Image (cartoon, rainbow, N blue to C red; front, side):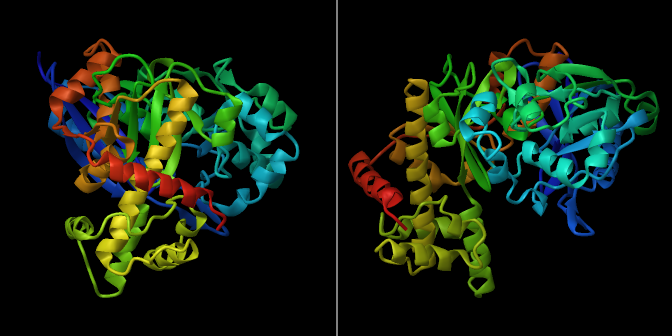
Length: 497
């Protein structure tokens, strides 16, 4: 088979890139074409996304791809973060610069909304966890603060859909990102019109929802000429970055909920793939979330504060004149005594502390534990605690699905942390398979390959990932010590702070 090229645009909240996925029929390799920064822009008292600059950067990357791979390029697709959106008005005019999810305009609106519609009713209609950044509360903020803009809106596009519109003229919304809004209804597979009606949120701007792998159309003619790409297909991959990553999980297990994944980065997203959203009372109590996946599946998952804690500790060490790279931090943690101190990684005190090691010591003192003193003790405390929190959430997922997890796949940057991988296997008493690091990009380009006929199924996508990446398996060990630590950790979670 002649090597085919699929261009992926992968946008994160801090950076973006354009990559080429080169597929020879059995293996895929990735090449970075262009990298660029991203982040919120202050406009007046608001935080916005500079989508026009991002669009310029994307075009630069696509031009580089056209110059290098020419006629072998089959398609292009975009993935991004969730919840944020743009509005198009009459004649497809962009009505304003899209807000960044960290903009403070939604503060307090979640609780205010729950006085109008009960939490249980919202969860039953959407299956989503409750966060003030969700699109639902952003729309309510717009309704209250800028109703004239909302009145002019003829189409709502989530961030990847906006760039697909720029590429092809498409005005649909892709499923995996639609499910992050908290106004998509899993049972009807459509927008939660009844919920929005109760909140008096207009719905005229909500368009068709399409599945990952939908061919949205051809590249706009003027753009094709400008970029040197020809009239290639524009394909919606799983446009939510975690949805794309889960599509690229290299599992060999068949069926759903028999394997779990941890998308390990600044946040750890731990979940299972299920055939339909889990909307039970127990799911509501656990505050899990149901986000869309490929082939109509759902990602039943929970967000855990992940490598953020390690990243912030490293920044603190640097500020205090003790710079350590990640390898050295792991080496020191490995040499530190086991289970000396444990923390709840999701305690609010760790969300944005002035100094992470100080916050960790303070939490340990409040829970009558010895405060970690050295860098190695601090990092070991974090890694052991993360692994034990994974165990707790994994137990919840097994309860909710009635299935026992037989393997845990760790993908993303955090899969390179060998010590955390081993701790996770030990804590969960389950084999951990680490890799690939580039799961999101692989999912993006391989879903495109399936859409254009180069790959036949999700099963084949995962076979290609297995054949194309180096995986490492960590078998569980020291189960008695970890069982004891788990009981102690559970007591700490239940103890009043």
